[in-house]
Image 1 (cartoon, rainbow, N blue to C red):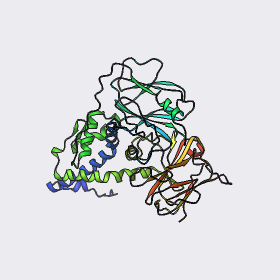
Image 2: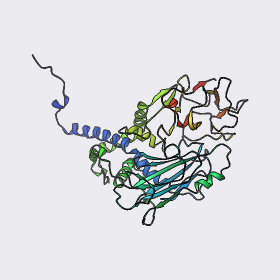
Image 3: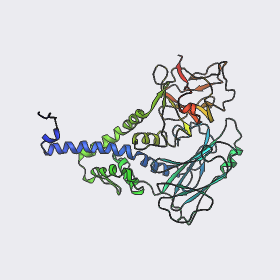
Image 4: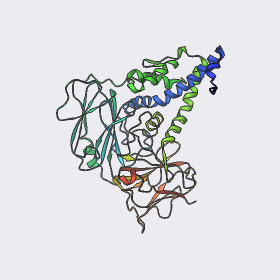
Length: 445
């Protein structure tokens, strides 16, 4: 019996200078794309830490920027002029705190009397490692101590210990505000959230700026190198990151001096293709339910680097599905992109079964921002005045550019492409297991 022969190009390839140059270029592209998908969250978070501690003067009321190691609260709901956060909600006031854990920090929260709030604790890899708030810890007063890696010193008494895996963390919070509510009570609550070092923290000089990459086509890798120098690679990722040395990227930084022109060009192509590759990977893990993009695992990425990259980009600060679901409506019942040149009806069989609140919010596709309109209405939801329920228990929302005769449930759209986000805070099992049907998005003209 003669064994079957299989083609094997590696066994027959003749090594030559031209072939090696081709191989180096291909290898650089592959590694550059892998480095982008893996490293984007780290670069994004390092940039966010600096952006969100760069406080403008005067600070807008919708801004939550504040100096390092302090809590910043927005005191008004997001508007189209609030550009810090893509896909911002219009249901809660945001909170941000970038914390450099040179020592543990004590976070104290007040009793919110069942008012919904959540504070997410993110690492520099955009991992949501802890939730504090209504669903997980309740709404009573509490004390929580953020503990950096390797800490062996004393900790505050009577505080819940929250260990994190990077020295810098980002606290991202939300507190519920109902439409038309007097904000004085909420502002009083906001002032009672405190963050203090538990020991002798060094003088706060702010974060060192990232390297200037103006005009550098490979600047992303320079920022990734700087981020690697400040954030140790997890043991589970070390085998992957070790390969990046072939493109000059190491835990000490990025040095392209040893790369050929073809390798540099390959890295530039990888950066150009990176966003599309990330979105394609993200889409591959998403489910389509009644035309809506349905994504779970936003707080449990594992090795799904494309999903982690996209969540840390346009969906920065998103919660896992037990805290909130964010189905995205990008197409209508014909499978065509939503566009304000047409009119739509979004029909719910009934109010979404949530334990907190729900809302349907519209965003301009071009910049992922809220859209200015004559009603200053950016969402329809639990707290919409006069939320009309039909005889069959259903809810129909008019989504269009032109103002309809009955505008009580009109969600104004721009005269251009847009998309919808359905927020379902503290979703019940019926939502999570798909028993409750998502609404239809029907094009009517």
